Length: 416
Image (cartoon, rainbow, N blue to C red; front, side):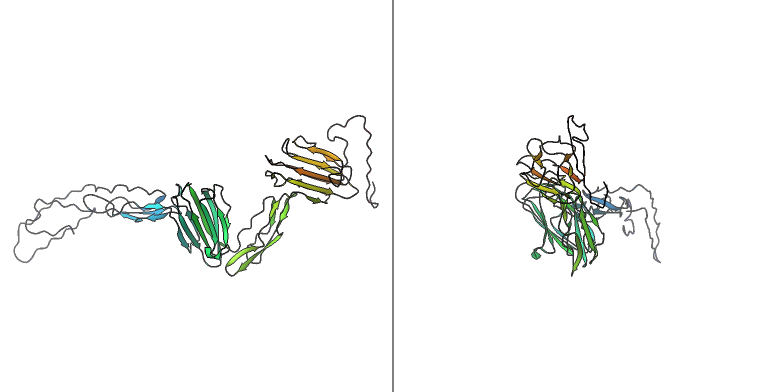
C-alpha cells in the first residue's frame, strides 16, 4: 500500500507505482459529504536495475529482466563453488537496485562430493596459480558397489614440491593409487573402492596453474585398456569376466596373458594387474621367423645397454636378416655368423647405411647391441626368416668372378 489519505492530505502529492498496475479504493461514511477529489495519472517508463553482469567462471540460468521484482539466477562452471546469493532481485523504489551483490565462483581448497555420479575438482584459484603452503583435501564418495574414475584434464605443479596424492578410500587405509607432480599430464586413475581421497600440498615457493580433474562413477572393474604395442581380446568388466592379451611381433608380454575381474566386498579390480608389452634386451629365438627390436622400441633405447640375441632355426635352413636405424658413430650392432661372439663377424653396424639383407651360412646367428652413455635414438627393427637363399649382394648386382655353391635339403617325404 502506498498510503491512506483523508481531508486535504493529498494536495500537491505525487505518488509513483512500482509496477504497471495501480489500485485505488474510496470509502465514504453515512454522514457529511465533501467536494470529493480529482486525480490525474500519467504513465512513464520504469527505471531499470543496471545489468549486474556475470561472475567469472559462472553463467546465468534464468534472466527475467531488470524491472522491479524481476530476478536473475546464477550458477558456476563445473568445479567452482558459488559464493553469495545465486538469485538477485531488482528492488522497488525510486532508485532501482539489486537486493544482493553479484556472486562469485571460486575454486576452493578441498570439498566433499557424496552421491554425485560425476563432477570436477580444481586446484584452488584455477586456472590462476594456486597459493603457497596449501593443505587441501577432497573426498569423492559414490554409491556402494561402484568405483570412481579420475581423468586429468590439465596438470601443472612444481615438480617434487607441490604434490597431488590420490588414495583408494581414506588415507588411513594406506592404499595409495598415485602420487604426481610436475607438468606431465597423468594417466587416468581408477579406484577399487567407492571412495577416493585427493590431497594437495604445496610448499612456500613456486606456484603453477594447478590441475583440473574430472571424476565419474563407474560400475564393476575399470577398463583394463590395451597395452602399447599389443592387443586385447574381450571387453567384459563384470565380476568373473576374463580378458586376454598378446603383444605385437618382437615384443614380450610382461605379466599374465589372462586377467579376471574380481569383486571383494565393495572393491572391483583386475587380478592380476593388466600386463605390458616391452621390447626385451636380448633373448633366444627359435621360431622360423620373427622380429628383434632394440630395447624400448620405437622409443629411444636406454643408455649403456648390452643386449645379446641368439637366433637358432631348423638345422636344414639358413637365416636372412633385415635391419634399420641406429645412432651413428657411438652405438653398435654386431652380427655374427654362428652361436656366439666367437663366431665369424658378419658386420659391425653403427649407422643407418645398412645392407637391405644380411645372410648367415648356417642355421644360427648371434647379435650383440652396445649403447654408450650419451645420446640414444629410436634404435632398430629387425626381421629374420629361415630358408632363404639369395645371390650375393641381392637385390643389388652380384660381383664378377664368383663361384657360389648352395646346398638345399628337405625332409625325405618331400621332393626338391
